[in-house]
Image 1: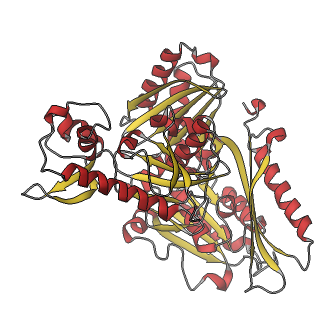
Image 2: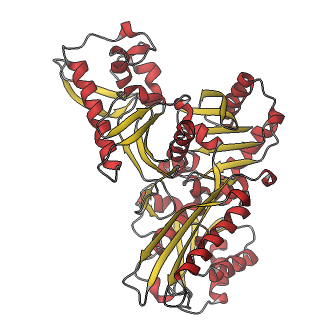
Image 3: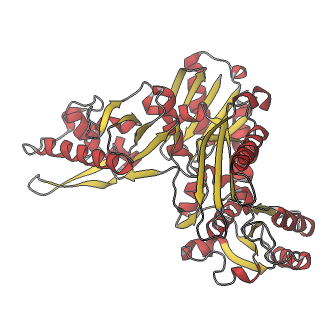
Length: 519
C-alpha cells in the first residue's frame, strides 16, 4: 500500500496504490504552507479508500519546492566555494555565466586551491590541508552557513573532496557541506554549478523534509518517506534533505512514469497537458529519456540527470487572443493558470481560454457553457486546428525516427488534444490520467548511476562494463533497492577522441524495486 503525492504550483495530487491498482485519488489546492494541502489530499484518499493510516507501507512525494525557490530567488543561503583545481581553474572563476541577481543572492565568496586530478585519476596538483583549513576559517568568519566543494575529475577519484569536507567539518562543524562528486557528471563547471545550487538550498531542504515528516506523523502515518528525483527513481527523505537538486525535475518525470504504469507501455511519447503548459517527453524502457545536453536551472548550466522535456505554451488556461473583429490573433503563450476558475468565461469571468474553446466544441463538459460568448463563424474550428498543429509539431520535435509512435495523454488539460494526431500510431488517455504525476511518484523505484572514464588500453572492455554495472547496482542496493530486482536500464559508451589511447566515457544506470526492509 503506497501513498503517492505530487505537490504542484496549483494543485496537490494524492493517490493510494496497492500492487497495480489505484484505489483512490484526490486533487486539492496547494497551500502556502504546503503541509496543510498535503494533509487535505492525503485524508481525502484515505477516506475514499476506507484505509487506515497504519496500513500505508511507504509514502512517495514529488515536489516543486526547490526549483521554484531557484526561479523565484527565495530562501537561498549564501555559499562559500572551495575549488580544488590548482592553476587549471583560474581562467573561469566559480559562478561564471550566472545571472547577476542569483550571484548576488547566493554570494560568490570562493577560493581557488591546489588539488584535482587528470582524466585517468592521476594527481593534477597536490592537496594542501593548510590551504583548505584557512579557507574554511575565513568563510566561517564571514558567517556563511553552507560550503560547496568541487574538484577537477572528482567523479573519477573522490578522495580529495572527501578530505576537504572532513577538514571543513573539523574547523566549522556547524557549516553544511556539499561535495560535487555526489551530484554531477564529468563536466567540471556544470558539476560545480549544481553543487553550489545544492548548497544554497540546504537549509530549505532540511526544513521542507522535516515539515513533510511531521505532517505525516501527525496523521498517524509511520511509513518511511521517499522523494522522487529527476530521473524517475526514489531517494530517502534524509538523502533529499542533503541533495535537494536531485529532485528539481521530478514533476514531468513523475507524469511520464505514471503514464507508463497506467498504460503498460514502455516506449512512447507522453504529453502532460496542464493549465499553463504542455510538457512533452519520450519514454524509453519505461523511463524518461534523459537530456544529453547541459540543462539550465534558474539560468544556471548544470549536468546532473534531467529528463529531456519540451515545454510548449498551451494548456487549459491559455489565453485565446482575438482582434476587435473577432478574428484569431494568437494562442497564448500567456495563461490565466490557477485563476481559470475566476477568469475563464466558463466560470463567469471575461477571458477567453483554451478550456472555453474545448467545452464550446463539445470536447469536455464542465463549468457553464452558456457563459461563453458567440464567436465569429469558423473561428472555433480555426482555433482547434491550431491546437492540433501545435501538438503535432511538439510530437515531431521529440521523435527520433520517422515512424509513428504511441502517444499517451495525461494531465487535466488533455481535453484539448484531438483523438488522432499526425505522427501518432494511436492516442491513449488512461484512467486516472489527471493524477498521473502522483501515480508516478507512488510506483517509483530506487535507482543509481555511475559515470567513469576508462582507457581500454589498460582495461578489458567487458570487465569495465561489468565493473561499472556492479558499482551502480551496489549504490542502488545501498539506497534501498531490493537486490533481487535490480536491473540495468541504460548504458552509454562514448569514445573520447581528444584523449590519448582507446579512451571512453562509460555511464550505467540501474533500477530496482524498493526493498521492504528499507523501512
